[in-house]
Image 1 (cartoon, one colour):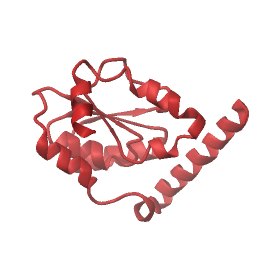
Image 2 (spheres, helix red, strand yellow):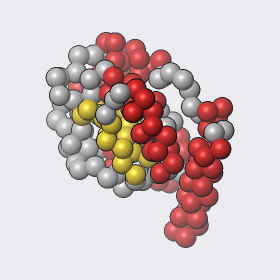
Image 3 (cartoon, one colour):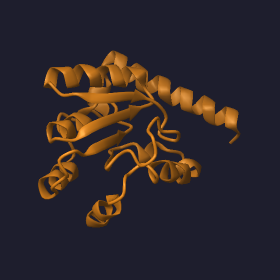
Image 4 (cartoon, helix red, strand yellow):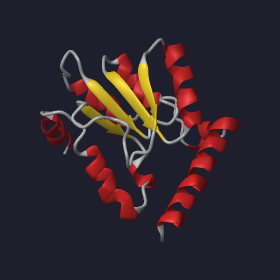
Length: 156
C-alpha cells in the first residue's frame, strides 16, 4: 500500500470516527461509561509521585484521561479526531477536571520527548496498521521520563 493509499485510508477512518461522534453512535460502539478494569486496578495499586504527567493516546471522548485526572495525574489527551476532543473537553468540564487536549496523530505525537511519566492506551494500538506498529512503538518509546521502565515492568 502506497503513502497516498495510507493517507486516504486514514482519512476514511478519521471521517467515520468523526461521523460516529457527531451522530452519537460512538456511545454504542466504544464509549463505555467507566474506565477499563485494568486501569482501575492499576491506579489502585500504584503510588504515583505527587506531580505525574500522563498521556492518553487515542483518548477519544476522554473517559480514561478524565479518570486519571480525577486520580491526581496532570493529563494530556491526544486524538486524531477534533470531534472526539470537543466531546472530551465537554466531559472534562462537566467533571470539573483539567486535561490538556491535543489534536494529533499517535504516529507523530504532539508531545515532547521525555515529558510524561505514564502512557495509557485503551483501544488505539489495535487500530494501527500492522506495518505502522513499529512506528507507534518508536513514537511512544521516547516520551516517558526516566523511571517509566519500572512502572512498565510492574505491568508485565
